View 1 (tube, one colour):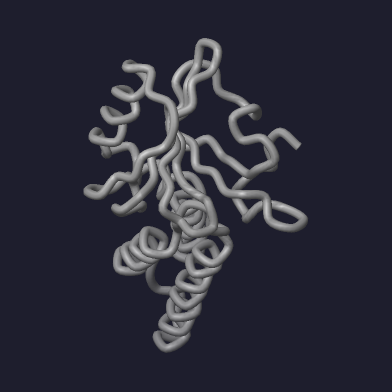
View 2 (cartoon, one colour):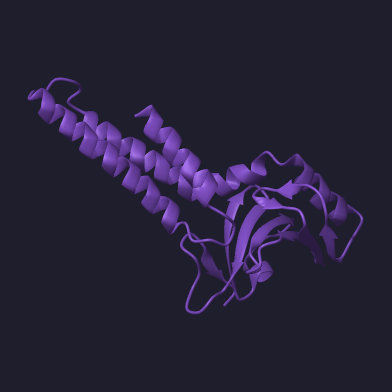
Length: 184
């Protein structure tokens, strides 16, 4: 089962990107553990006994739920949590009162690799630094000070961790799975 956890976690890490729906990755998690559950049941039938752990099926279900929670809440947050360079760049732009956009040619922010655009907007007592290279306009945002719907007017966003958010444009009738409509 440890192998299945590694596969599910790795697939989530490879599939989930800012602005994309979380549905494909969640379905991949379910499919992996469905296969594990069927294999577990098949092995028990081959043995023609109830040998082994009686709670094996429950354990598979619990591990599947944990992997789905990692996909939904952990992957995007983890992608920026360990990125101290992005935090330093955002805090620097905010500290010097920078405003506007610039193209960054080297490095990465979470799952966004250079070249990417870094845009700083200053507000009354707060600021936002947006990082995007996604052609659909999705990316990460670092918010200093008051955060809320006004930063993502008529768009989709979700809070990740601490000052980090992920955002996507509002497309058609709604937001990608995992994002909430903001400021509409």
